[in-house]
Length: 449
Picture 1 (cartoon, helix red, strand yellow):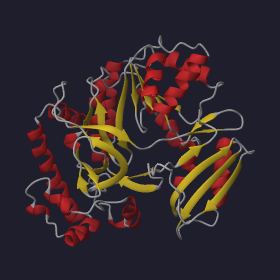
Picture 2 (cartoon, one colour; picture 1 turned 180 degrees about the vertical axis):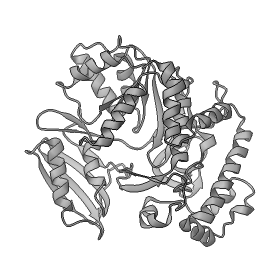
Picture 3 (tube, one colour; picture 1 turned 180 degrees about the horizontal axis):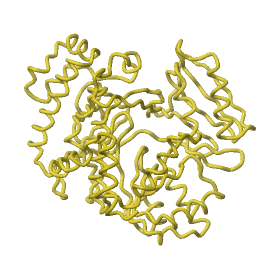
Picture 4 (cartoon, helix red, strand yellow; picture 1 turned 60 degrees about the horizontal axis):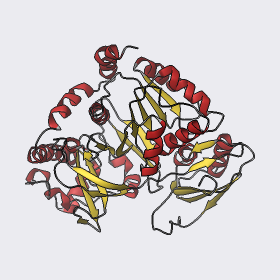
């Protein structure tokens, strides 16, 4: 489909059909990115106050929480006032899910889930407003790198193993909007030529996906003397994992020296930051209040702090002062690109291993995480691959865990990795952390270099 037709007709019509004001939000963000820091703070204060008043009136969980904290949204004077509200944990969300949603949300709520960097499965909901604003932020930041709505984009991304009617509908939508999804779950020497042929046929202007998957594909394609530099790719967008310097170099070289651009966000947290042409990770200030905390204290530039998010456009199920479990540092003021948006730096978290199957396929770890995270009653999990045909799944569970839960996990792993894989499900009192103190929810002794 011609990019201009997608940009001017098909995609705007698509968003209108789904009741999303994506392009109106995009126009707003295009203006707001050039505001001064003071203007952005005023904008955030206004949006935060509106969100908190809404939460007080329509979300039972927050109505109770504000009373307990002695907080009154109507009396807010500045952005610091709302810090009386305690930070929100994943455990609290799971315990209070039925009290955290807006019953009268226009257009209804959409269910999502995530494994999260801490290994705690999380079910949550959000609305059209949140979907549209995150999509608009992504469109705007793509423009920073010369990619606009309708330009062909190839995704090396997670997708469910099973094919459903909605997946077929999504495939049709992707074709109409110049998007192509290739599963990141399986990378093998046999699969790489097929993926390369898809690149040649589709001719994407940009590639979007997990850095570990794109780097692995780049390495295997190079080993097989498959040229990626002549495929027309002008930029690679990395997300969902930490982008390491060696991955950036591998990907860039393989695709002919193109820029590899990093972003930070999460399914539950939203689209938080993106690199500009100067290499700075700019925060989506119009959409968030972002804090960096260490033991409840706001850290300064050069100090590590947990990223705590308040998404200002997430009205269907507000996450107010949400603890992400990820660590980063606040950046310094000002950027040569001229945008007034704040910055962050030294982003840590979400390091994901691959799983290697007995027949030699490299699967992104999310392929097996999906098996575990959708089962009710799983509090935490950790997946350990000790040998190519040996996997252990450590679980902490509650009373919601079904009687056939273990069997479903074993069957799901075998479906993805092969029947010869031995899967041991171990129920434990506590999930051990790494020696560094960080939590890794998938560890493969086989996939390591």
